[in-house]
Length: 336
Image (tube, rainbow, N blue to C red; front, side):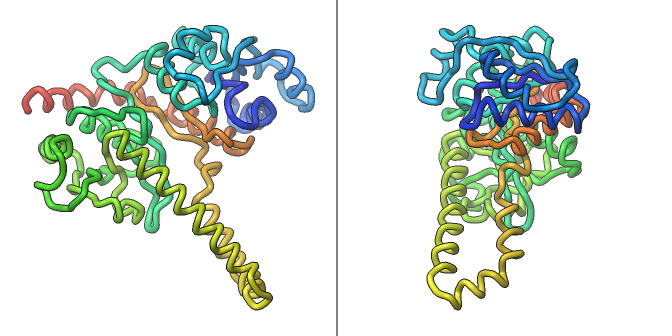
């Protein structure tokens, strides 16, 4: 398996990208092509011992920053590290792409350059989030702000295939994020999407209110990208604030510090649950190639796990399985 890695994407590039690539070729037996400024990447690679045949460099003179207009940057910067990586997947010179760079540029590029699986209306950004009782997937978490009801049905399908083949959970539960649990609640989008999901053969459990999403009782929660991104960022913000408040209170007195010391194993376990490095990245499902979006501040551990995630998706044949099952779902859309 060959994996294209955006060498200049992320806050810690290229150092973290190179270290992750070296670890990945040793642990996962994959071949990696790092795209980016060759001199910088070579300098980082010189710090490590590794099989020189397993890591190649594709020079790219440009870098797409998170502040640039995503689609314009993809069209204009054809010599950027991200565009070169996208091209490798498009031309079947790489089986997957990992990037911790601009989310917008990656999603635009994956759609415009790599292209969609035939029959998929919109690819979906589908991160796995920690929950109280179990982890859960948000589909969509920001790739598609404006959606039609049948997009959400396809999001559910892609999430289901990911859960069954990557997380090994058969017949995962699927819910629709809505302002109330009752079937008649919501706007036109959610009402029509509810009817489609209800008519499918998915394990659809109905509407899920935002306050219940974090319980993790529903494996996959579907929504349009505006709602999903709002839920995602609110969730991350609340988690960050809780950690900050706990730290502040623990440091407020000697007694609190002693109590904090006793509870340190509990806090470490809790913190690990919310550590994105453990998963590695968010899958962008629905494109012709495997695309994994790593967090912008990813370190080498997170990027290494993103590479592992891509490898697991490849070995599971997730793209082929989406294509196969999509036929039945699209027949349901036509009937409705």
